[in-house]
Image 1 (tube, rainbow, N blue to C red):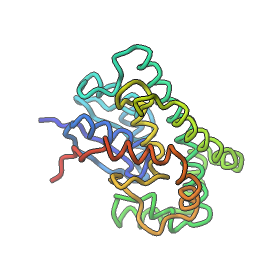
Image 2 (image 1 turned 90 degrees about the horizontal axis):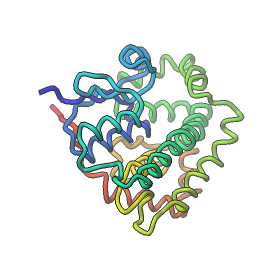
Image 3 (image 1 turned 30 degrees about the horizontal axis):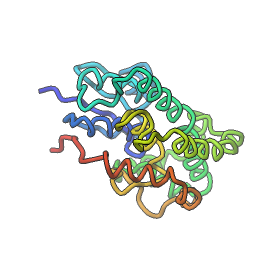
Image 4 (image 1 turned 90 degrees about the vertical axis):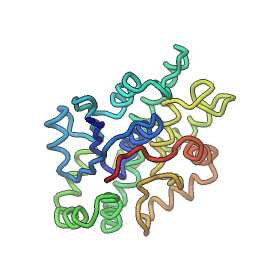
Amino acid sequence: MNYPILWHFPISHFNEKVRWALDFKRVPHLRRALGPSYLFKAWWATGRATLPVLILDGKAIGDSSRIIAALEQRHPNPPLYPDDEAARARALALEDFFDEEVGPALRTAIVGQALATEPDVAQAVLTTGMGESAQRAIRLAFPLFHPFYRLRHKISSASMAAAPAKIQAGMDRIVAELQPSGYLAGDSFTVADLTAAAIMSPMVLPPELEYAPPPPLPQILVDYRNRFAGHPAFQWVLEMYRRHRGASAELRP
């Protein structure tokens, strides 16, 4: 049987989003953690130099939102898209907001700062789930990797200054959008809840997070956790993970 294969970057919140969708739908799959060389492999497969990439039915699909859309067609139950048209539009709009506005800001605020001030700790975090060979490789390549990472993710003094407000806006929007059900779009768990919780997971670090960064945590991450620990959205993310993250559907040797 040709099982889906996920090329992923373990620590990334966008990759966590797709892992969660696969696990939520109980889709047996294989995982391949790719190091910095993923750029060339992903570009060759999809025309996009980004992870995650899911090989589904022999086709390589890039972009977390496109992957979830494909999973909804191939594995519709349990659903992540609401049946109601208005609720579905709301869910997809929230998915886009957290993907485009909050996800990059969180990466900029935490990883961008940590690479500059605690490079050894940041390197260990970035190679979470990859083993010692990846850690050695990133240490050797760091003089080139650091400026490349900043350029690739458009990390600048301006984007770092703007990032905290965008993270705050993301946390506030979770609270503002919550329905009486406790979910963001309708009466059940949808792609909106999954995306918001997954995007926030590197800051919240729920116990159910499969690829948690090793100690010591970057000080900037500790500072953000302390800053937002009392925010209602922080507890909401923990609750979404507790209710819905479940066990991994990864096929292990």
